[in-house]
Length: 251
Image (tube, rainbow, N blue to C red; front, side, top):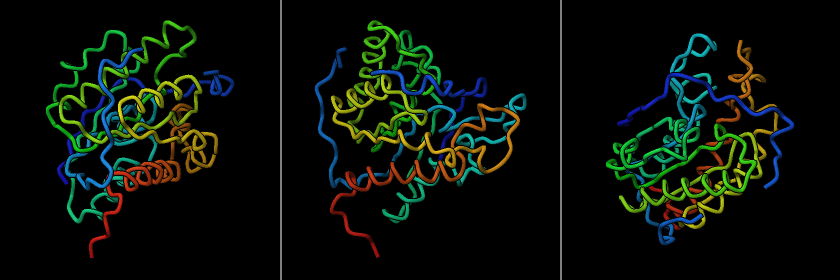
């Protein structure tokens, strides 16, 4: 499997305090495009995420992996579990590009997609999995919600314009009504498929601290092997029901 990793090695995604997880709930700049039911195209897969998708080693928080935090090994993070499911379905190893775009979450108002994600746009993926939201600061004002919506719509529109991939957007692992609502609405406007994983983070057994000890509470709150498996399963269910709809298993 040809896999390229693009990780932000500094900083860690820290979950919001429990009381902030249930916070209450622009323009797209692009015409909504159809999804890809039954296309079977999955040769190039792009993952745009944060530390749950990819985080390099960071000794000061006790994290030594170079994969999705906080799986116990690379093959157990949701990205590689999902790639394995796709490979088994298509009988070929997809090319994968995996990028940590936490900077977009933190700086969406000024983030230049065309320059900062040029490699990802040039990759022209068949499938884009967008797994962000946790690092976005609380969208407590109408202005901040509008700006996030606009930036998110522009991000998806850029990939649709570059190659019209099938788009899958998941909700936050640590559920947030406001952010998840915007993710869902913009995904729908872009013709993508929204994957609701809001219940996963609410199950303590899906967090890595339930499986082993971590020195850093933020790392420990990330999905462990069980949580990663559940996340991969949710995404696979959406992808298999869309991209591989009515595509029989190959013998």
